[in-house]
Each structure stands twice: as structure tokens, then as C-alpha cells.
Amino acid sequence: MFYHVQSLINEIVADEPDPSAANALQEGLGGQFGEMRTMMQYLFQSFNFRGDAKPYLDLIQGVGVEEISHVELISKTISTLLDGSPRYQGKKFETPGKGGAESMAMAKEQQNPHHFIVGAQGALPVDAAHNPWNGSWVHDHGNLVLNLMDNLVLEATGRLQKCRIYQMSANKTLRNTVAFLIVRDEAHQAAFGKALESLGVNWSKVLPVPKFDSTQWPEVKRLMDLGIHREQYTFRLDGSDMGAIFSGAAPFNDGTEVVTKTEPDRSFPIPTAPERPEEFAPGLDPELQALADALTEFKEGMAKKADAKKPASKSAKKK
Image 1: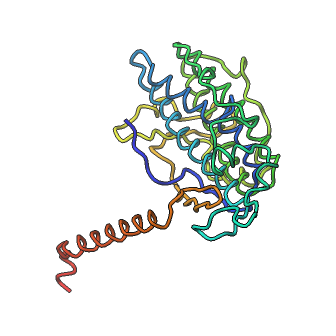
Image 2: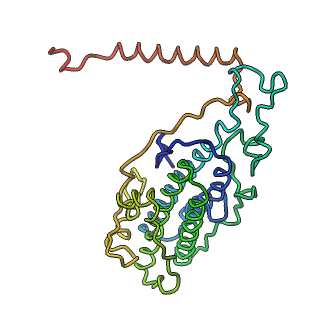
Image 3: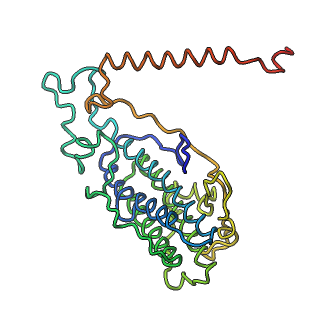
């Protein structure tokens, strides 16, 4: 079973809306080497895992669970890049387009008008060419070494593509998220490389990780200075054996050390998506809004009454 914490694994930095940047980022979400692929591939490999080699199961599943948070982060980032793009200036309950105004006229000119027609200015499970995400991309060979090799190729290719996406836009919202994913892809390359090493596979001779200096980009360098490119997380409440594999010298022969942690040291608030009247989203009319407000007021009142009934602490009584 899985538990969810209402926070993001990385911060979404504010900048101007940029639908073109949002569309480029769709490749990192729903493309063949995007986060939806990594999430499903690692989770299915862990669900189908055979035998009692628990450290390898824990490693694959730990990375897979992290990928869920990456899907969440990219989706929120795409929505942020899209949100507000038409600049609708009408009142909350006013009918969009009233008086002949075209409240979303610019949407039809965008690279992916589905972002506005289908997604209501939100992320979609597609790539940058608008092709739907495809489950046939998920590989589970039933063989641990083959799975780890496949996963290493997937992370290396995903990291390359994200570096290309980073260079497509100067938008701070896009760059901050993509920089984080570049750094975490390197950590995952280290995880699968370390696992292969422990199985006696000299993977670096057969499958070298593409070598380029990603610290040339300030957002990436800042995160690497924090060391998160050498961490991997278990996201487990009941303990994990991942540390039996992911510890000690990094598999890149660069003198760095890798470490297993339960969870990242930092988390960030999930930004609230504002209502978009021109998209009829979320679509509350005045009557429904009144009911929703009444429910919120009732719940807040009940919470205050419950707090008032709680006994005072010992320190408070002494005072």
C-alpha cells in the first residue's frame, strides 16, 4: 500500500505563463523516456519481482515510488506554465465570452491547443507531439540484470532529453523543475549502476553514462552542491534493505559517496491552482459556491469547538 504526503518533492518557482514551455515539458512527462514511463516501469518490475533478493526489490521500488512524486511535480509545473495564459479578466461567475469577447482566442495558436480544449490549462498524459502515453513502453524482462540495464538506459536517456528541454526555454518555472529532474536522474543512474556492480556486471564498459558537465547550469549546480545527486530514498515506513546496495563509492569513479535515506531532507508546499472561469473550471455557480462556503464554515466551527474542549496542558495549568 502507499501513503501520500501533501507536499512537493521540489519547489515550483514562479514566472510568466508559457504554453510553449509547457508543451516541451510534456515530453518529460508522457514521452517514451518520460516520468510516466519510469514510474510504471519500476513499479511493475517491483510488483512482479521474484525471489528473495530483497535489497534489489527495495531499490527498484524506492526509485519507482519517487517517480510518482516526479509525475506529480511535472504535472503541477505544466499546469503552472499554462495557468492564466489567456488572461481572462471577467468576474468569477460571469459567462466567458460575454459581449463577443474571445476569452481564449490565443489558445488556438498554441503548439498544443488540447491544453486548453481538453485539459483546462492542465497537464495531459501525452508527449510533446500530443501522442498519448503508451503502456507498451514499460519493460519488465523477468530478469534482474536485464531490468537493471534497461532502467539505466532509461535514466540516461531521460537525463539527456531533460537537458535539451532545459535549453529550450529561459522560463524559470520550467528550468527549476527540469534542473531538479536532471540531478535526480543522475542519482537513479547511480542506483542502478551500483546494483549492477554488486552483481558483478561491468556495466560502464558496455553502457557508459553520457558524460557532460551539467553544473554549467546554475539551477543544477545548486542542487548538486547540496549532494542530492548522490542520495536515494526508500520512502518506507517499515524499513528497507536498499542500503545494502546503495552505499559507499559512487559507480562513476569520481571519488563521491552514495547514501540511502528514508526520504528527502526537504519538501515544498503544493501551489493551489486558481479557478479559471473561461475554462468553466471548477465550474461552481453561485448556489454551489454558497453550499461549499457553508460547509467550510461549518467544519471550521466544529474544529474550534473541539479545540476548546481539549484539556489544558500541565504547563498551562501551572501558569
